[in-house]
Image 1 (cartoon, protein in one colour):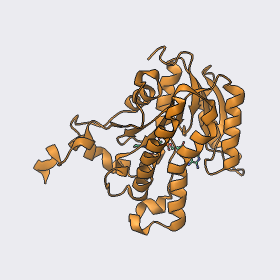
Image 2 (cartoon, protein in one colour):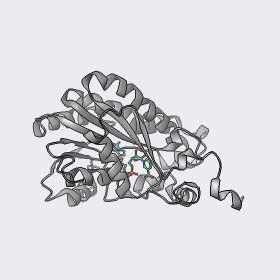
Image 3 (cartoon, helix red, strand yellow):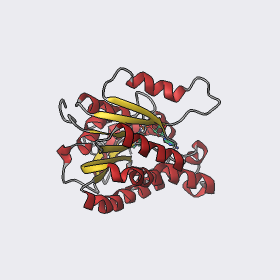
Image 4 (cartoon, protein in one colour):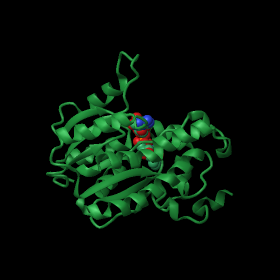
Length: 272
Ligand code: NAD
């Protein structure tokens, strides 16, 4: 929406490519007149082509609202400190929004039953997909302006058992709880914390988490009879990160065509 983010600036994490949900939301912020510092997953030292940096550079270059690109692997405390320092330097007016759009689990762990998840794989998935929301929020907490909004991306598999989502569902349950505790703790700073629970979208992470199989199910079962779009995720995310949602905190907003309200297979009953 033109002007929605006029005079606002903040931090966007989780843009991998043009299909990333973070990019759909960033697009809304940028076209709404906002300014963003971006983080991206650092390339491996032996990757001479610097593919991750190349992808995000291609998306953002020439956009006057894109202020910086800063590497961030959320498992590295020193990189979290560097992000905080970069925000202090390049966003001296403070942060009005922070987008956390990060998740990862070992592909082998996602293929296993949840109870067979490896100990190391469980710790890593939890650290990257849930703990990182706390770590990022803590790293930038003193730079958040009153009225600022922190947003994360979650999925229904943290609320109900969704076969195939497995260990990531456990991580999303933890992430949802982090949203509520953070919302309480950030309240005195007048900072809001919410999660957008998106229905399946074709992204790199989504494919790893079994999205392809979910698309048909949502189309058949959701009250709206269709899947959501990247543009809808962008607009809903922008809503939660903007003053339009002032007063909303600790909330998990379902953007899924209504799929989560169903208590029976609905229109699919005929096929059973
Ligand atoms: P994506 O692959 O485009 O984004 C995932 C991001 O996580 C990538 O940018 C990746 O670099 C980043 N990441 C992974 N490990 C990291 C680490 N150690 N440090 C820093 N960054 C790291 O896919 P997406 O679908 O846009 O995923 C974004 C979020 O949305 C995730 O939390 C995902 O679980 C959630 N989500 C996705 C869907 C879907 O259907 N695609 C639905 C609901 C929620």
